[in-house]
Image (tube, rainbow, N blue to C red):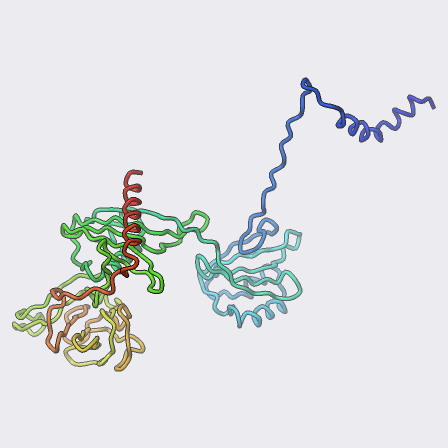
Length: 415
């Protein structure tokens, strides 16, 4: 065999050495160098704490009368493992709590058996429970999806109701309830007028760019009956957060304007009204708010229950002593809330009963009565002192805060 024959016969083994020699050559300015593009080192997608791309993923919804065993058996999980999952779940999140209509995720192996390795139950949009049985033992833990907080802006002019205006314009309707809570002491939301307007900054909660709800309202400008009302959320050390106007006064008063969030006023406080049932003229020393039967009735202020019972004309009713000056009463309830009885202390906004038409009533409503120094008065014309204002040491910082918020309002309006 000649030398050249031997070289060609073994050329394959010489290639790495030839390559090394060529790579070690000195570059010159006329040499053309290859363009090297490194491969993207893409991080695996993580969901529920798992590298989700490593599994076969099945999404489902728990059907009526369906149990965890029904789901897992379909995914080749044996009975002994299902029993262990059921036993171990009791101290963390009992599988008997899994509800109809709730979403779940199955992570299965990518082999031919496609056996389930983990079951993930979505308690709500954020919270989930993992039942992991990928190894010999069962592990169960709870978790939360990462939530992005995005500052958003909404504004509009009311045509008929605040709720309807938000709904018709595709805005977050929950803002109606948020604004009603913020201005509960200053605006009667049952008496909004066409032409009233709102401008609100709020935090929206999102998961993977999907909106799941509204966080805190940062500020609101509300125009009602020609008056501009402003509310700014502000947090103070050791005091907490609350809503204040530009003068640093709290928007919270001693009493809510009404015991219902949304309704309509059907009969006001008067010394002379024709009674629709008794068919005679008599005083009506309360304010009637009509609402669907079952609507929650709230205590308009902090206080102690002094009466929670039934009487022929009042129907089911609750009476609350707030202090040495004020008392309130709520009549015609369909039922009194659980736990509401004499001696129980309630906070402002606590549900004390539900709208009904018991007693002397023609339809579902609550008759709201208000006492001052033992006499019934018209709560709608009473002036109540505000809660604590911004602390003096924080006044300068609060001013800077609302000025920055107003700038954000302007920026959103321009964009």
